Length: 127
Image (tube, rainbow, N blue to C red; front, top):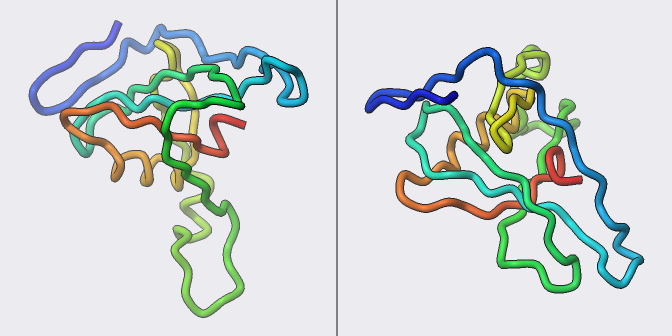
């Protein structure tokens, strides 16, 4: 059960953990890929998503999100500090819990739209 209020959304902690379904390999005639539908929400609210299998040869329009887990070697980095990599968060994916790292949680929070769902391909969740 997901309980929503004006200020935030919280989850019933009895939700089971999300398990992936196998994809039809891309080399097959009906090969698939996954896209993540991020449901509308406010910044700071619980992230609620759906994972859909779509034809790899004719996917719907989507935005791609890829990120780095480890530190970069250059002078500047858009990657959170090393201590942030160990911090885990939980999203609701297909009505079930899914643990994600801090980098992807921060990115998804910033991509939330209050009115419209977003269709994403996120390497950490869709691969």
